[in-house]
Length: 327
Ligand SMILES: [Mg+2]
Image (cartoon, rainbow, N blue to C red; front, side, top):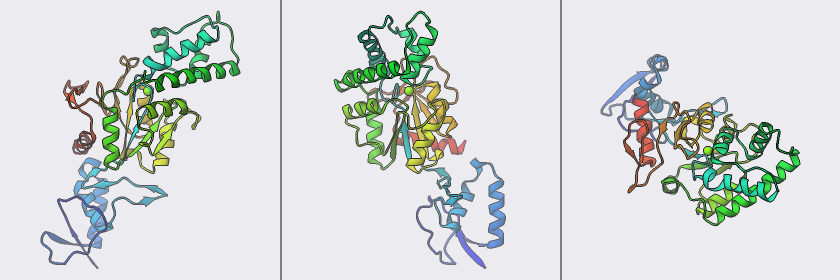
């Protein structure tokens, strides 16, 4: 049996078409030779597999496939295809911690007659703890001089803080960071899937997206207590990827903190980090990209590692993906 195949410079898209036996550039590949090539291809490092991927794509007539119930990596012309962008919320979409959450916590403490306020330094330290209720609990554990609060007290306090926060957001006091709205709208227009992966309260997310006019932009919103373990556990990313129906290597995550970066990396994602007001001193060695912000065409951000000006758009992300496959 003879199988016709060609090594084409074009990306392989859609169903395989039968090739004429004498087509220019065609070589004949017996099934035995193909299996031998496939074995050789599989033994190669991933970055060397471009030609093999094309030949395999032709012969299998497939852009991906299913094995063991999970979708396999989508490779077109040796490049991983970008299917989805996943965004953290606090610090990534907006400086919510600085402009919204800390003032709201302090207002809730005042209203409850509690004898403490969180200054910048205290709040920066508490941000290592993920989740508002968990932060209050940690603070009280460190301050035996403060009155003890029950879980019900903490839950009530946190509900009031959320009311205050959402009211601030709805008033426009918390604005999106540079480039966020631009990138989301561009990705949406190009047909990419979009998701939120955060453990902040769903009410907080809804308020921010509504105020920004982005309520309908996201295909999946993973927020609140939908998973038991918060970042740096990868659970929220696993939850969102499952609902999007994409593999980790087909998506890019956006984070501002070390905890978020660890969560994304542990979920198998490439992570773009845009450090925020409270996270600038954290460690981001494992970030796929590290930029001051996403930037706007008239006011770019900067690549922290190279100092180069950067405007993060879909083209920039795809180019970086391609470079990564070639290196
Ligand atoms: Mg964050």
